[in-house]
Amino acid sequence: MHSVAWQAISNIIVFSGVVVAVVTIIYNLRTARKTLTAHFLFESRTDKEYRDALYVLRLTHQSGKSFRSYVFPPLNTFVTDEDVAERRKFQYILNFYERVAISIKEGIYYEKMIKSTSYTTVIETWDIAEPLSELFGKK
Image 1: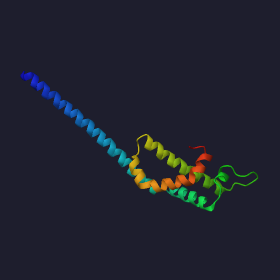
Image 2 (image 1 turned 60 degrees about the vertical axis):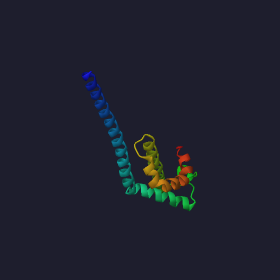
Image 3 (image 1 turned 45 degrees about the vertical axis):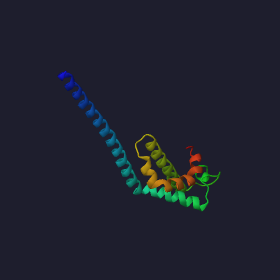
Image 4 (image 1 turned 90 degrees about the horizontal axis):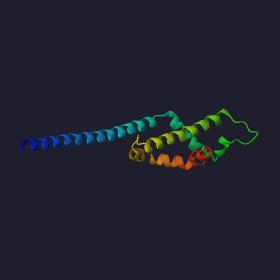
């Protein structure tokens, strides 16, 4: 009987250790994801290409120039180096947000943090870029 009691206590201790290990792993994974997200948010704020792409996208939208003309220039028109550079910026911003969306979907980034810090920028960019994303074939 004494041996059975020690066996039960031993099993409880082992089980408790496993539970603590699992909880610790889950906690560490969540903390790592939040840390990675915070790092991403900081880096994106200092990303010159990102800032330039947002600026050009908004400027083009406010100018009333058709996004379609960047992707499908009218026949017999000359495409300037500036047009090509702007198109690359449009592609950059679309690809940037696509990578963010995929990273959130795959559980790499913490969605709540990104929403709380970037919601307005993302929604404004989407509202402007939606016709452009359709032209580039991204939905």
